Image (cartoon, rainbow, N blue to C red; front, top):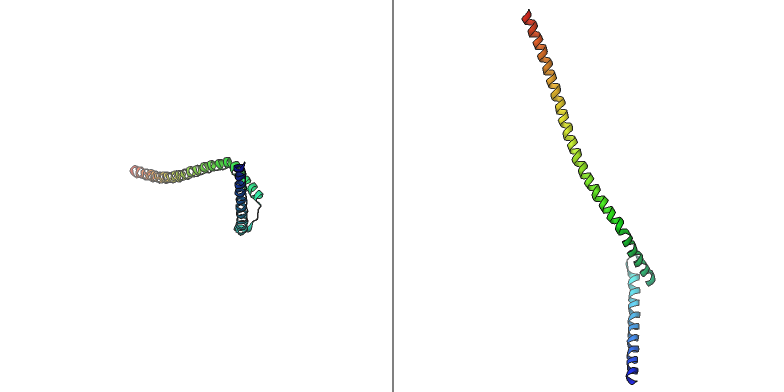
Length: 126
């Protein structure tokens, strides 16, 4: 019984020490909260609720963030393909313009040769 009593006394002293430590930590916590950035004062319960909301929102936004990242990658791929296609279109347009110039040159040469041949034929007949 004496040992039991001593154990209870030791436990009571330990509980008092923990209560004192808890009070001291609570005071330090309150001081840190008040001196922290933004000077927002929340109770412990509010902070616990705030953390819970943050965790829930992080979990809830994980899938949409993954979707957003996937769509952003698709968008970047589409932009890269678009740039390549635009470059190819410009190259083909330039070749088409060169071909038109070549056709015009050859048409003029043909017309000049036809006129020259007709003139030569007329000169030969005279």
